[in-house]
Image 1 (spheres, rainbow, N blue to C red):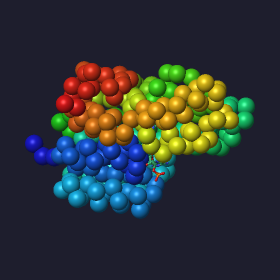
Image 2: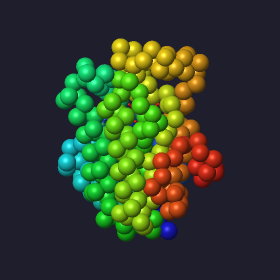
Image 3: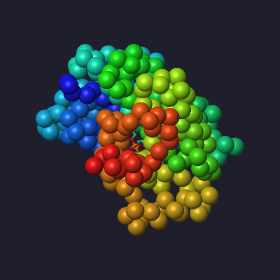
Image 4: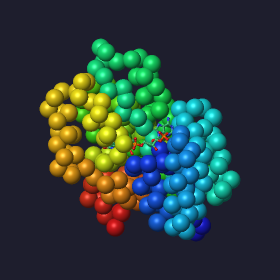
Length: 255
Ligand SMILES: NC(=O)c1ccc[n+]([C@@H]2O[C@H](COP(=O)([O-])OP(=O)(O)OC[C@H]3O[C@@H](n4cnc5c(N)ncnc54)[C@H](OP(=O)(O)O)[C@@H]3O)[C@@H](O)[C@H]2O)c1
């Protein structure tokens, strides 16, 4: 069978970069997206250095034309789309509901929910044609755990979980999963430590400060490997679930 083709959003750094590199190591062709073209080009070069086949398209996932152009770029380069990984997201605004900026709040949901919806819609015709189409939505514990100061992020990740579950109902031949990647050492955690203090409950904020100080954050490569394995091998029987990267079943799949 020819090489799987996978689209990864938010692939310029952090978890998305790790997922893209792991996918290339596992033999998939990868199409990368994020807004920052220079950072994306660097990841593309890293994958090429591994001998991987890679394409990229810079753009904002919440812009209506970007999803269509991203899918078109993958199809032009690799002839198919077998899976998409909706990883791009923002944590901000870190503010209590009473003090939050409504424009910034809506922007979060445009990126974290509307972005995945647009890419799913654009990719579906190709995912239906693939031997096994897969949609991996990168969710968070925040989808099911309310955290003061994170209203947009929590609401958006909860919506992403439900979008995943509805997709599984509507498209029974496609694997749709929402996956919690753990607490990962990325720029998003830096933003949390820098901007979270004023908005969050002190105990909740301190847990993140302590986890960082104790070296307890995950290197992106660890969940990245599990998420890449899910994009290539997650079984149809799991479709619709919200699962964690370190679930023993997921670890078994990652080998
Ligand atoms: N880090 C954690 O502890 C943690 C925990 C739970 C869940 N997650 C989830 O894991 C995923 C990855 O997060 P991360 O920690 O790796 O964050 P990150 O380091 O901030 O990376 C986010 C990525 O998304 C891209 N991005 C942001 N807005 C975008 C937009 N509008 N259009 C296209 N690309 C966009 C960024 O690149 P540009 O800025 O260049 O666009 C970057 O490549 C997210 O879904 C996040 O919610 C993370």
